[in-house]
Amino acid sequence: MVDNLSKSVRSKIMRSIKSSGTRPELLVRKLVFALGYRYRLLKPRLPGRPDLVFPKRKKVIFVHGCFWHAHFWLSPECPIAREPNGKYWKTKLLSNKKRDDRVICLLRDAGWESLVIWECELSDAMLIRKKLAHFLA
Image (cartoon, rainbow, N blue to C red; front, side):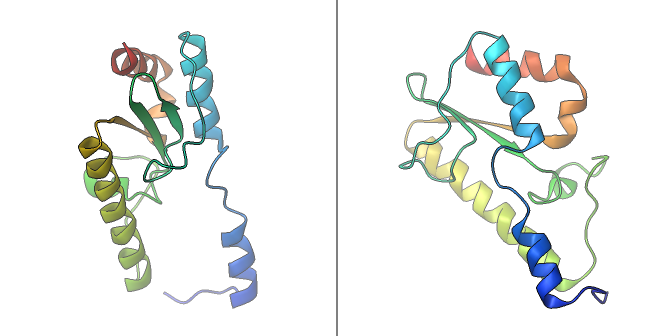
């Protein structure tokens, strides 16, 4: 597949994609806060830069975008992400997936529990609320 945008335009678009403070992340923060839990956003010594950190509980939450974290490989019925065409994107997303797996293992080895919330799951607020409550209890 050929990109119909110039390299500089494509680069500008890619730079504008936020890594934190996204709408899905803000929704999870709001649900966690409503459940009565308080969290930290940045814990520089933790691998993988978790989205929400609960230091006293030694728990972290990652809010993953379905495309960027290759949810379609884990859940083919994901309504948001589709497997991309082209070697570059498949290689890039596979690299992201391997990194995510490595980060979860590093955290587990350091005694931290991790929860991954997928972007597509956020359409069911009750499910996410239950998932969060169970994880943080």
